[in-house]
Each structure stands twice: as C-alpha cells, then as structure tokens.
Image (cartoon, rainbow over all chains, first blue to last red):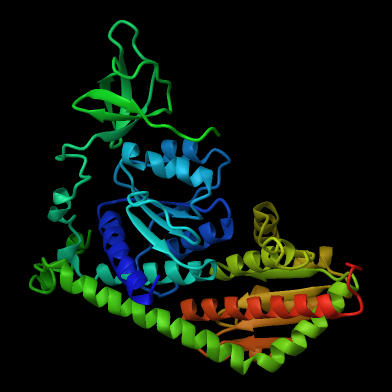
Length: 227
Length: 225
C-alpha cells in the first residue's frame, strides 16, 4: 500500500464521513481486538483536540455480542468504523449486515486485505499506523466541513453498480422475524427498513439469517461461518 | 447543518455553491500525504533526539522488571488510550515477540476512575491509585501531550515519594513536565500538534519496549520474571 493510495483512500473516506455526520449520523466504533483504539476514536470525535471544532457523535461499542448491539443501536444512515483484521469474525458478522441495516462502513486494518466491497471504505496499513490513520481521517473530515456546498450526499452515488435503490443487483437483507407458514413470507431488514419478502425459493430461514433478495423474492441464503 | 448556522446569510457566496467534490478530494489527498510524511519525519527525529534517554530508561526499567517491579501507566483522553496500549504492549506482546511483563493501566477501570473523580477530585485519580498499588521497585509512566496535566504531575509526585521510577512523555516544549522535579525521565516530542505528538510518543514507547525486551533477553536475570 503506497502513501499515495492510502492518501486517496483517506480523502474519499473523509468526504463520506463528513457527509454522513452532516446528515445526522452517529458513528459506531468497533475494535474487538484493540479496544483502546475504539476508545481513542470516540474521544477524538466527541472531544476534539482543536478548540472550536464541532463535537461529533462517535461511540465505542464493546459488547460481547457485537452484531446484536449494533443491530439495536445503529439507525439507517449511521456510520460504522471497524478496526481489526479480516480474521476478526465478530467484525465480519457486523460488516456483512451493514447493507441490510443501511449503515455506511469504514474499515481500518492490517494484514491481508478484505475482499472488494467488504466495506464502503477500506483503509489498510501496518498495525502501528492505526492511530495515524484515524487522526488524519478526523483532520480531513473537519476540512470537509469547511465546504458546506459539498456536504450534501453525492447524486452520482446512484450510478454505482451496487446502489441498492436503482440497480438490478440483489440486495442483502437480514431476516427479522419468523416465516409466516401460510404465505411463506417473512419480515426482513432491508437498508434499515422493514419489508416483507417471499421465501418460497429458499426454504426455511431464521431471524438473523442473511438473504439475497431480488424483486421482493429471497433468491438465496448467504452462507456464514459457524459462530 | 452548516446552512442552519445563524451567520450563514452573511457569506451566501462563499463555498455554499461549491458542487465539484473532485477538487476537494485532490486537496484532501495532498493534505493526507503531507500529514503522513510529517508524522514519519517527526517519529524519526524524536527517536534520534531521545535515543540516549530511551537507552537509559530501558536499562532501568529492565532492571526493575527483572527484580519483580511492575509498570503503571496513565494519561487523559487520547493519552489514556496510549496508556492502555502501553500496558497491553508490555503485558501481552504479539506471539513470539517477547516476554510478557507486568503492566497495569490506571485508566482501565471506570468504577475506580469515577469514584475518585467524584469523591476526591480529578486531579487525584492517578496518584490515589498509586497510593494503593505502588511499591518501591515499581514504575510510573504518565502521558500528557501538553506536559501540564495536573493529575499526571500529581501521580509523578506520589510515585517519587513511594520509590517508584517515574517517566513522563510530553509534547510541545515539555510543559510543566520539563521542569518537574519528580520525574526521573522526561521524553519530549518537539511538536505542537496533539496528533503528531501522540504518533511520535507511540514510536517512543515501542522503541522503549523493544530495548527492555532486548536487555531482559541478554541480561543475567533472564527467566526470573
């Protein structure tokens, strides 16, 4: 990872972060392997070191059940900053559900890079550079706030292949209730909203399962590693 | 949000109509490159400037660890997390990276911290814990980017009175720490950016930890800890 690449990644992540904060987001910070990093990020945003910079809502979450905690706490449009490697199963479980919950994700880590699309923004470096990465992210986010004309969400975002609103791609949703045996339908979380989908094609599903949905129909159940 | 600020109407033409994020992204990336470069430069300059002090401090810490001494770390805010990470680095080095050494963060327990802050005052939250835990032969390491955190300075005084080795990490010109008579070692990062100071302090801690490990591995007391 060159300095130029990480600088470009930080710039794009800061723009997204500032836009989400401007729209009222809270940032949930998860760092299961390094809780001190999680606390550092939270204090960085809530109590800025530079007098006059706005306090931004960031909360470090360290529950044993991270998936359950973030599902409960995060609202659609919120930010989720994950700190950790690709082998962190707790983080992976939360990140896989981010589309279903409608939250925007950023991932700071080291070691093998995550698969493309595993998070909205991937900031990858050596383990000793995590503090530098979130310091610079904070600094750049506040620079974006000096450009109010650019804080509205980017209209070009909908041209993206994975846009959940207007593309033909299937959407990842999370089962949020029991299947109605009479209609084979089930309530799911899709982009943070509750919807009803048909499960005829996929058979039995349980709350918490991740399902790929197209045009109101569940087309496959996403395999997850056993906990 | 910014559009709602009551002074916004005074400058309706400044930035508010800005629509092209491309130019901003270019500026942000350039800014990020500059900050990353400055962080690296400052870390290298700090390690060079503090080399003799790190050497002397590592020697004394290794001697104390070998004799059963324990390390207590403390600081406020981001420096509290630096204190946490320092304790974790000494206690749980990455597999195969060295010998685990007894280190405790004095900011780790919110019940203790809030009890002390509420009952006796925030300036005593660390010194009161050293009264409970500290023994001669132990070590007290405090972090303050300004060098002026009262509770950190009070802990150095308590540590000194109890025979602990006292070490402080500061930024700016060292602040009150630079002239603190209770400090055996004061490592100063020459910067006035809190972020860059913390990054350089992390590099200092890592160098210190490496040298402590090296001395324990080669010293006569190996295996006694």
